[in-house]
Amino acid sequence: MQPVLSLSGLAKSYGKIQALKGVSFEVPEGAVFGILGPNGSGKTTLLSIILDILKADSGSFAWFGEPGSPATRKRIGSLLETPNFYHYLSAVDNLNITHAISGRGDKTDIDRVLEIVKLTERKRSRFSSYSLGMKQRLAIAAALLGDPQVLVFDEPTNGLDPVGIAEIRELIKELAGRGKTIIMASHLLDEVEKVCTHVAILKRGTLITAGSVDEVLANEDIVEIASADTATLLELVKGFPGYTHIKQDGNKVLLYFPIGTAKLAEVNRYCFEKGATLSHLYAKKKSLEAKFFELTNENTQNN
Amino acid sequence: MIALIKTEWLKIKKYPAFWWMLGIVALTYPGINAISFYGYTKATTGKELTNNIAKMLLGNPFAFPETWHSVAYFSSFFVLLPSILVIMMVTNEYTFRTHRQNIIDGWSRSEFITSKLFDVLIISVIVALVYLAVALFFGFYSDSTFANRWAEQLQYIPLFLLQTFAQLSIAFMLGYLIKKAFIALGVFLFYYLIVENIAVQYARFKMDDIGRFLPFEISDRLIPAPAFFSRFGKDAKASYDHSISIIPEHVVYSILLTGLIWLICYAVHKKRDL
Image (cartoon, rainbow over all chains, first blue to last red):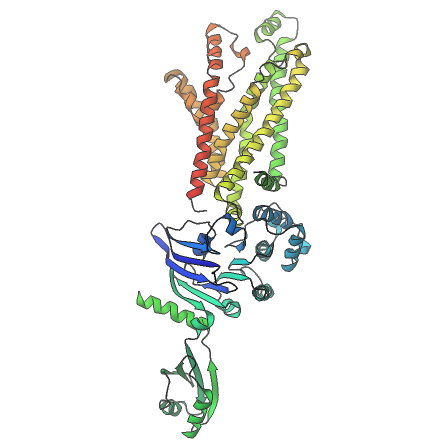
């Protein structure tokens, strides 16, 4: 299947600072694609290039298999970095401009998207009178206008309160459920973990890894066990076959297995037969956070 | 094209500064001409010999067809006002970061500049319409006996439009390249009011008048000081005739410079990071 977006060798420098160093990956259709990275890792630079705000020094990208152009941008709803609107115009007037330029949506659709982001009551107020969160909501409404097949969100929950964050998360899930492709940059790992099907991790302009969340996150199974006597348990499970390494974490012992090979029941039986009764047995998926730190730290060491 | 103008109209029509500036222009242009007209009337009415001499020397600069020229000349001092509006309209796009959003939403980079070109064009036309109304008013009001000569010297209408557009284009380029409203305004005012005036006057006497090739002066020469300024002495008459004779030349220079300005804006916008 034709990828919605493919990047090949994108590079960009600001003077001496190399913001992107040859990044390549593909976004399959229907994916919720998270682009992760610490501050200054090149996420926004990358999104700016694919939206023709910045010119790449080298490399190329293609939307729907064709080079980026005004026509491809009109098919994409985007929120880049900050909500950019005319301060003296109301929400409706601003969305009229979005409509006039992109051709997305119409009068009734403007009302629909304002309802989704809960700005209906304030739709006639000037943008300059909005709170940070309301501005962000309007930017999301503008991206949703005309129900585009592809959405680009750069830090979509910036400035939102916890309820707002949860609403946007639900919105993204709902959009994904309707088969939309969503490309989302974030430094909020929790957010990405909850909604994304795919991730790309950037650090200092280099792509560390990209792929489906399951592949990126779970390259090993972790079994967490505990018993009354941790030291004995640790010694004892060293005889268990198949693990790659063992780690003690406080009063718990962590057994790492190649992906798909951990069998909890066998671990339990083995320990019991050897005379240790487990008080805790848990198959753990590595959190994105842990994985993220692991990947980004690894990279630092390699440097 | 129509779509671009419609979109710009959505931006402009609820922009308070646009209406304020329009109101100010609509007051200032008649205002400055009314002051000049008042000065003229005061000097020429009365039975004193001096009044009659004044009338003889000045003619009636506000009667047809001279009104086209005189009103254009007096009004052109105030291109400053629409220039502020033009600078605000382009720097606003940077302030609101909508210059990026317009591209993200699907304009090409050249469409963005074209939309601004239309803004400047629309403002120039509005300003020229105000001029037209003022010139017509004074033509009929000051001395209706000449009303039958209204169709003479109509070339000052396109000349005024070209001058306004050329000078507003310079203002646009400053706003476009400098990006910050107040710095752009400062540079514009300092250059327009002070630097170029001094340079032009200096060049007039010391450097064979090469000051006429400075950016604003190129189009200033489209509308030279009206005839009544030059009815005193032979040199003045010769210099007036000269300034009339170089108008066609300056039409070409103005068009070339304005074309160059817009080409620069298009070229820069095509390449630069937004």
